[in-house]
Image (cartoon, rainbow, N blue to C red; front, side):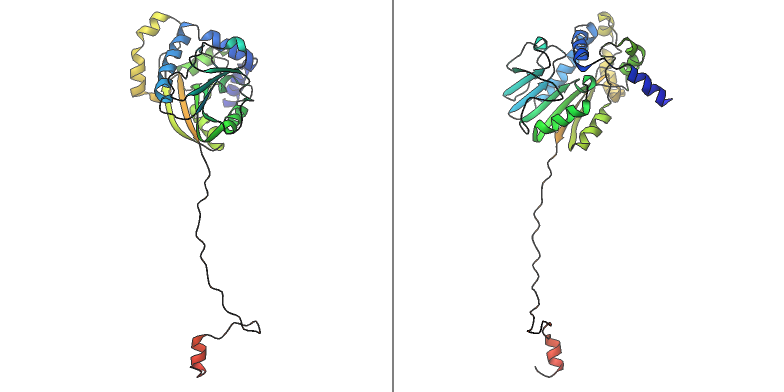
Length: 270
């Protein structure tokens, strides 16, 4: 059963990362996409404000906006795979590149934001390896993702055959992402779920079901349609240990140990 379900989900995969990211940008222009974007922006505003550093890099802009405006980091950059996809920037610099090969130096970024990058990347493991490479020690990576264990995950089973974003993307559970990051030496410091309303495209129904956000956070907090996971890059430190110096026994000329005091007393020499 599980093998059949796995093959079914693999058949839903998007054609390529570039096309999937373009489709995701179009989906965010729909009523449901705008609703999710609002929830994500409010969550990021609260979370990024408390993360400090000198350099921040946002990889991708599926929502069509700069998501890092609330951050107190002075130097902010937004990277996209196509210059046409650049959003309106609010004090951030623009750059073009691929998430699997970030055009920045090693150990140079304090905070890396990945908004739904893993779900639509050709090589999600390589994206995380790049995150590990570019982040400084004690740097943070923030991951936005779709939760497969939610009403959104059920909708993916029903709509994935259409090969349209976001339903054709990899819905990676936050616990799987947490395990992947742990293998690279990251500690998860924050996990928050959002968007408990069913994925409907009718604006009126979405508005009337807004009360589910409060109920979901209280009664079924892990079943939100989306999530934000923040992890810190661990640093292996060496703890200095004081050496235990032991005096060496004196050796006589023949190479044998010299007689002890008790031995001398026994022989009547003392």
